[in-house]
Image (tube, rainbow, N blue to C red; front, top):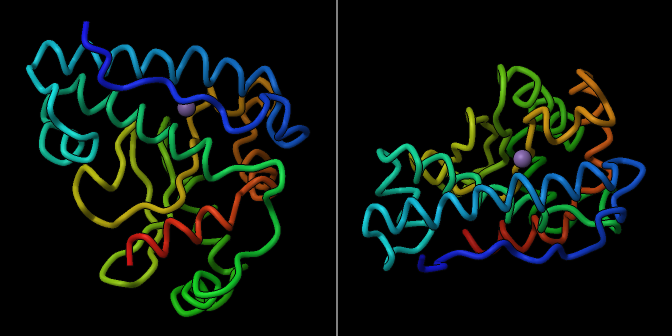
Length: 199
Ligand code: MN3
């Protein structure tokens, strides 16, 4: 099988985000869940003759194929998830991103409330997103492993995994507590880079 996509190495140790996200959850999330999306995406690409496409093309143009949609989304979503978190994360965004958050939502606290609501009201499994649409920031959510690249509703710059596999071992059904803890590991420098790249 052609190995078009690879499971990326983690940019930090599994335990690096403790106590906010526990080491065992991170290890299982990476070595089992993300690895399975990677392998299943490569199988779907081979089965459908899509070897020459970028992940962005696959998500935008081939999401009518369920195995491409679910596993391509799963591969891309988790790649970004590891990168937008950091053991040195938390705090407040700065610079142009901070100004854009204030402009779009009124304040950072109001942005967090809007994002929290999107993450809490996503029934079942899915993701909450901060994205850029026509130059402005917006918040949305998606089911399963869908993401905004599939329907082009915005350019995602920060995505939060609200599948139970992301938090249940530590937080049980407490999705709200997990979201509150997650703000402590968001890497605003990385989110700022993503914001700058899509403007
Ligand atoms: Mn996940």
